[in-house]
Image 1 (cartoon, rainbow, N blue to C red):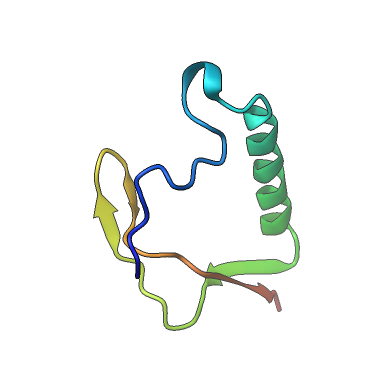
Image 2: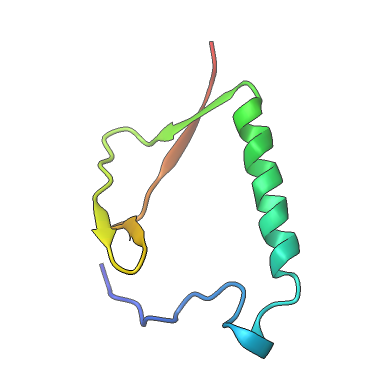
Length: 74
């Protein structure tokens, strides 16, 4: 996998004056959407045959992409 530059993906800009004005609204919308998904009749889980390897830095994050699957609950 090709290594991306450190700041290749900054969806809400950087800190200070250059941050996105809609950042808080977008984060709230994502939180509501995730809560609705988890309360619905769908089950959220890891994609088949996926192993998540943690990478520790200032904060924890996965070493590689994490793929999820949505399945209907019984």
